[in-house]
Image (tube, rainbow, N blue to C red):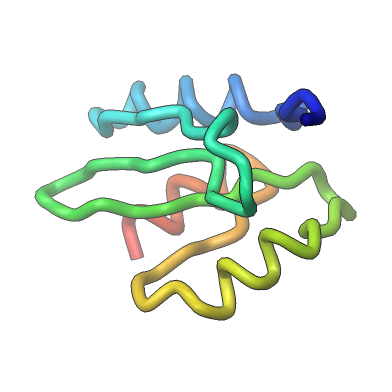
Length: 87
């Protein structure tokens, strides 16, 4: 079993989301392609996959994102994460 890798920009993204009043559960250790963050804001939950700019999804992430019946967004910055939650 390999250790879960957390992208360097994840702490900044989590902090920005919490600063705007969102609740954030960090799910990076779940593995099997599951998104890194579950964000609750204004009565709605959002699944966010955090990637560094230019980062690629793993095969497990591609499978899960393709089969998940809810919304999952890939974000590369705090600004993208905030927009994902507000849009």
